[in-house]
Length: 273
Image (cartoon, rainbow, N blue to C red):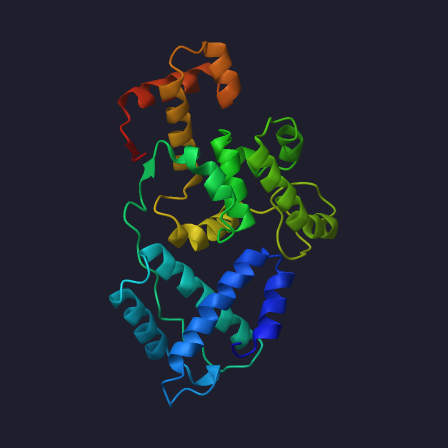
């Protein structure tokens, strides 16, 4: 057990996080409070300081028990916990405010083969549903400007999916249903809160989700770069495919296809578009 466990995990449940993700939060928070038991200055979350958390994370890194990705995951979990307590007025300050995640190696580059990791990425519940949906749509060669448009869900309905992709979409629709009912819209990217303005998620708002999840991955979550890498990977592996077929599969006109063909000829194993 850890302080305020019941109300915090109820909050996570209401956010429709997967049970495995909630268990991961529980594991990280139990470990934190177990480690802090040896500090007589800390008897409640309100007494935890940034220095306490920094020392805890530093000791874990020194012991080589966590990777940079795991470090960022744990920090993200601690941050969400303390934000919840702060917003609920259970603590008066935010001890994670000054703590920063570890910049992962190659985070500004993208392997051209990133889309081959898609099955694993779609089952990674540490990533938000909107981030995983962006990865799925981009792996199907759609641009953000396309899939954020109202009515795109009608186009997506006709897209053939693998079993893993369909399983993810089933989970996404469970997450999405309350939003859809709240906004009276079947569009995929909707704002979490009801507003009097348009309900559709904007590109800057989507980027906030992607930036929040960036610390979990060792490649860039730029939708434009991801799409470019996915298209180049497809063209490198399908050089003999007819032009019309490529245009249809990649959702490109002829001029755009020729551009990406030239780019794919010169791209190496790591994309820096």
